[in-house]
Image (cartoon, rainbow, N blue to C red; front, side):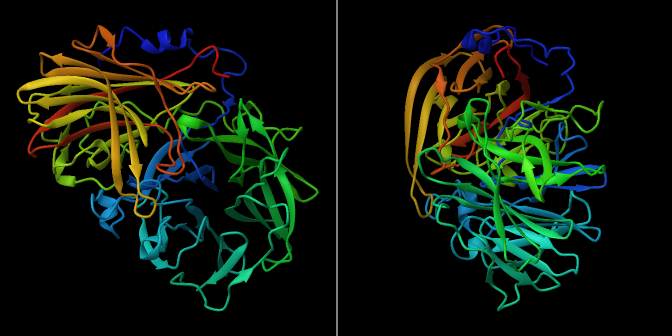
Length: 539
C-alpha cells in the first residue's frame, strides 16, 4: 500500500483530521446515514436483514442491492442487472446519444412468498422506457426478467394480502397486474386520488405499504409558494381503491441543507418503525437519512418528537461489523468489486484483472473525442464530509493520443489527465463541462479548460483527489506524486456541482483511459486507495 504523507485535504480545509471521538455517541447512526449519492431508496426487511435499492441511472451494473443488519452499516451485495441493451445509447454512442441522467430510476423492491421482486422503469421515451419486473430467490441475485410492460413513472409494486398485485405510479395512478406479473389487467386503471389545489409542484416517488389493515402511500411533495417547502406526504385508505385522505408526515430541513422528502418506511423485528428519506446535498448528490417513525392517530409521523430529522439515531444492534458502500481496492481479485460501476455499458474485452494480476488494465477500444464518450470509465461514489482517493498508473503502454487519469466525474468535472503526445507524456489538471441535447442526450460539446500542465519524465504516476463536502463547500483538490511519498498540488481548487438537467447524479471518482487517435494502448492501475475524512466541523 502506498502511504500518502501529505494530506492536501488538511491544507484545503484548514481543519484538523481527527479520529472519531470515543464517546457515548460512538455507536450511534450519524445522519446522513449514507453521506453519498443514494437517491430514490426503497427499503424492505426480511427476517433480521434490511435490503435497499437505489437509482444509478447510466451506471452499470445497475440497481444496486444494499444490505444492513442495523441501518448503520451498509454494503452492496449485488445488482439487478449487469447491462441494459435496448439501445446503442447505453454504449455511449456519438450518433444515437447517451443515457446520461436517464436509465434506471426509482426501483421498487418487495419480498413475497419467498421471492424478491423489483420493478423499475428507465426514464426514457418509447420501448427504452418499458417497465421491467425482475425476481430472484436471493437479494444478491441472480435476478431474472419476469416481464416488460408500459412505462410507469416512480412506481411502487404492491402485493396485497389476497395475492392481488398492483403498481402505483405517477401522481396517484394505479393498475392491477396479472397474477403471473406478465402484464397489467386492461381496464383496471384508476386515479386513486386527485391532486389538491396546493400541490403545485412535485408529487411523485410512490411507496405503498400496508399496516394494520390500512393502505399507506408515501410521496414527495413540493409546493412552490413563499414559506412552503418540500415535504413527505402520506395518503391512506381502508380500501386500496380509496377514498384516500392526506397528511404531511415530514417537513424538516437538516444539517444546513434543504428540506427532505422521498423515501419509505420500514419496520424492525421488534415492531419499531423507521423512515429512510433522502436529501439534496449539492455536489455529493442525494444522501440518505434515517429517523424514527411513530404511528400517531394512524399516521406514520417521521422525525424526532418535534418532527425534525435527528442528528443521530440509535442503531438497532450494537457491535455489528463495519461495512461501507465505498471501498479501497488493490485489484487483487479476478472479479471486479461490487463497489465499482462503469459509466454506461462497458466494453468487456477492453479491461482485465487477470492479464497482469494485482492490476486493473484499461485498454482503449475505440477512438473518441473526449472523456464523456470514453468507454470503460470506472466509477465510485464520493462521500462526505470529506474523502480521499488516489491511484497509481503504469503509463508505459500508452499510444500517441491516449488520455488516462482520474476525475472528479460529473457533468462538470475536475480532471487529472495524462496525455501521450508523440513520445512525450504530459499531466494536465483541467475543468471540463459537457453539453447534452435534451432529447437524446447526445454529447454536443465538451469545454476543456486546462489549468496547469507539466511534462512527465517517467512511466509511473500517482494521482489523487481530496473532496470536501461540508455545507456550502464542495471543493476538490488535485495532486500527484512521482514516488508515492512526496505529493504536489496541481491546478486550482475545483468547485463540484450537481445538475439535474444533465447527469442528475452526485460526484464520482472516475478512472479512465481512452484513445483520440488509434486504439491498442493500455494503462495498468495498481490499487485505488480510499478513505473517508472526518473533521471537527463535519456536523
